Structures are given as structure tokens and as C-alpha cells.
Length: 276
Image (tube, rainbow, N blue to C red; front, side, top):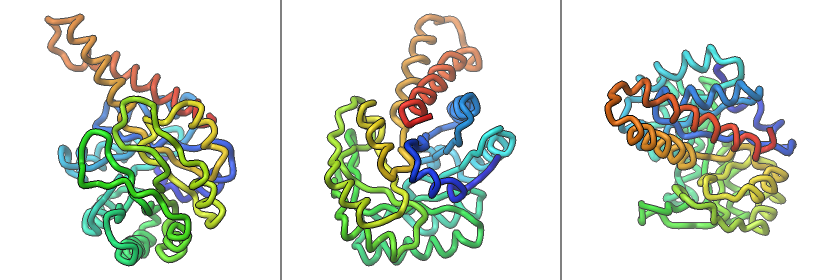
């Protein structure tokens, strides 16, 4: 069933489990994520990031993902990840996304709050959930202009109250696009943030988090872990093996079977680590 994040994120904040938000790039990985979610009766979050929406228009993505979500046996949210402009967030809401993230992490605190709050107000008309970010999570492999700015607990408290977001992304030691699990989590910072606000929290760059840290982090008020690189690596590795093993095969529907299974297996593993 198609849903926003609103129906379950507050309840999830007080359980020892969280939902993986998976960055997907088309039918194959979306189908694999939904299949994994249905196998264990968990909600699914299908996220599209900047790279994806530059490749496929928003309305085309909604046309693909919305029927899949409606037909699913579990709640499925279609989420826009890292919108840098209000116009893009509004376009996604109007196109049919059920959740959006506005990334104002590079803005001043005042502008981040003001612009995020405007999106929150607009999203309420459509019952769309809104994620904001305070602090900034840098990239392991690119975007040197995106600085690592750890979340200040006092600013997090103010941002949660003044922006009105449904959930808040924080920076406590992860990096986007990490291919190895070497993130150093600042638990003291997380505990200080959690002590100052009741808002459900989000961690970006979760591919780089060890299994032990994931299982520890779900005991905090974190409801969503963004995961993209792990699925891309699983799909890419399996596809490479299929192409090399079958050099005469040209039918991508056949070549995609094992990569889809690899994504499903990886998604199930992440659900397990997050308490499902």
C-alpha cells in the first residue's frame, strides 16, 4: 500500500528497530526491495536521489513506483532524497511522492529553518512527510564542496521545533558513498541530540556502518537509515559476474535475474540488522 512516513515513524522511534531507506534507480532494485520487505512484513522506503532524477524524470519515476507501492502487501513510501531547492521538493510532492527530504545543510541555520518550514507547510496539504537535515554528511568519493559538519545538539533542538519537520537527519560520523564499513559513530553526540529533542532521527551514509553499530544504533530514537551504496555494489558485482560468465548473452532480462536476487538478499540482510 502507498503511504507517507507519518503513520509509523513516531511509533518506530520507541522500538528497537528502524526502517532502511533504500536508494533505488529503476524497476529492478525497487522490485527487489519490495520483495524483501514483503518476505518479512516490513515497511519499505523507495528513495530516489539526485543521480536518479537526473536520469529519469520525476513524473516517470512516480509512474513506475506508485503502482508498485499500491499493489504491495506492505506499506511502501516513495521518498525524494536530498532536494536542494524548494521548487524540486514541491515538484515531487505534486508529482505524487509521499515523502520528501529538503537538504538545507549548506545554508545558514536561519535560512535552513525558514525554507524547510515552507516545504513542511506545503506538504501538509498532500499529507506528505518531510525530512530535514541539520549538520552535514560529507561524501567519501566526491562532492568536496560538501563539508562534514557534525550536528550541534542545541541547533538540532531548535531546528526540530522551528521547522516542523516529521523527522530529522543528523551528522554523527557517517559518510555518503562509503564502500567499506569504517564509520566512527559519535555516540556522545547522538545521546546529547536525543536528550534535547523527541523528534524521530535519520542517519545518512549507513552503508559504512558496521553490523554491531547498526544493532546498537536501533536502541536510540533513529527510525530511518539511508542505504544506497550497498545495493549498488550488490547489483553491480552480480551483473559483472553474469556478463563475464555469459559473453554471448545479450538479453538484459536474463542478465538482471541474479543481480535482482543479490539486491533482495542485501536488503534482507539490512532489515535483519535493523531489528526485523
